[in-house]
Image: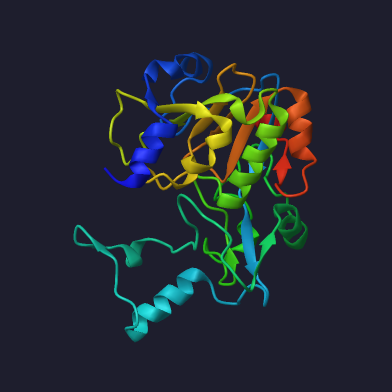
Amino acid sequence: MSEESNLMSSLWPLVPSGATDWLLELCGDGLTGFMPPAMPDAVWVLNAMYEHEHGPADISYHEYRQARLADGSASPHIVAGIDLDAVVVDTGGGLGRAQHPGPGWRRLRWAELARRTGGPAVPDGLMPSYRCFPSAKKEGSWPLGMVPPAEGSLDRETWNRLIAILTEYSPAGPDTRCLAYYSPLVLGFTDYDNLHVRADRLGDAEILYDQSEADFSPSNLWADDRSWVLCTDYDLWATKIAGPPALINVLLNDFEIEAVRLPWAH
């Protein structure tokens, strides 16, 4: 067992999957994450996207990929005899953990891109996902020079800030007992019968982001007293936090994370 696995087992030991029974009753199936209703309030924290300091390029990720295939500088993706490059659009988006790309890149707010494109950040009736910002893309592919939000996981910076806010808000602070659930999808379809749940204190939540079992932040994280719960759905670009209005207002007014209310997904 690796040192990282030993540390994870020590700080966040596995607990019986029955710890999710209340979420199953409240939310239904948790295959992509247990999506809670408002408790009594809720907000969506949007995954970060980034733009290069030189701005978006005229060429899309898909066009760039096809050009590299044509000149031989890239090899085709062949799976089970199928050339994926011939049937799949390279959107430029990623699945799982993400973080700031590094020097030369800046955070691009959803609100800023919405103003630029002239449409809503999240269209009415939709969830924060690949269906957002259709006019920013070329035939479904993002322009080079932009990094779209990751799917299925909070980015590192948003995760760290969210944990800091939850720690400050919770009466017990870093000693708040929490539970973390990883859906079978983020674990590579390992076990549908014995759900993967770990428990520890909120002050040790940072390690959950880097644990080797999954390349994702937890599908759900909640306080043991059920005063708040978050859900990062495997198919979405945002995390829903359900809890009391005081917490939701803190998230909406934070200067780092970007949070929005979605009345149709409250």
